[in-house]
Length: 70
View 1 (cartoon, rainbow, N blue to C red):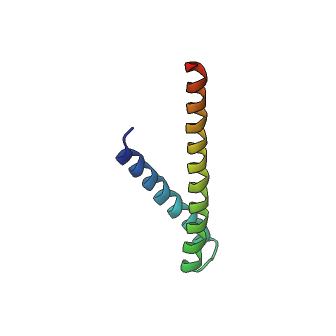
View 2: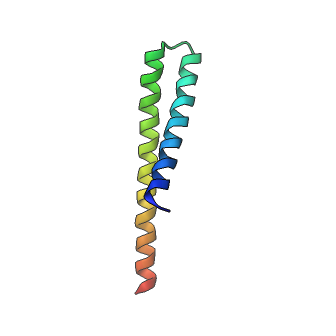
């Protein structure tokens, strides 16, 4: 996978998740700005967790490759 594809997929996931979470808060009666802030915070946190997991998986893959190479 090239970096452009990864960037586009990440941006699409972020955008769709942010819109969905915002809609939940807005439907629950939050003001638009508060719903926007809440959804931005939650979306950023989830994306950080996703990035951490991708990084951890890359480290595990690298370690596994090094073990089998030796």
